[in-house]
Image: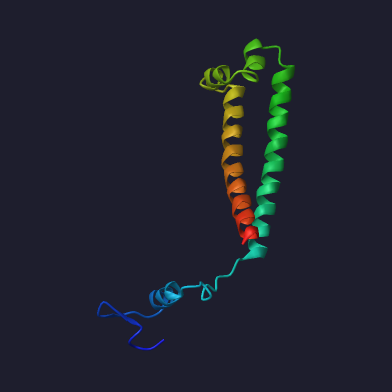
Length: 125
């Protein structure tokens, strides 16, 4: 890159700004030289899967405890979202733990699904 090419709007650009400008000027994208970090992405996916498997086991145990419960509200909370929310508001309620676990699952699942979407998009290229 010449000195003329590295001057934009009268300011000298070097380092990442100059490199980014040079890459962006490439009309066919041949200059896009980004690493995919496939081993790290695969490792991340494996860790997220392991977390989801553990969380799945935990929520299954919570569900089984609710199924075997003699308390009607606890059993109903397994079937009705509204009851789950009402029961979760009670202090030290088992439904509070269930709701927290469901929220934890949701967060990890979002990360996992986002990662999978990115992998599927990359495979199409």
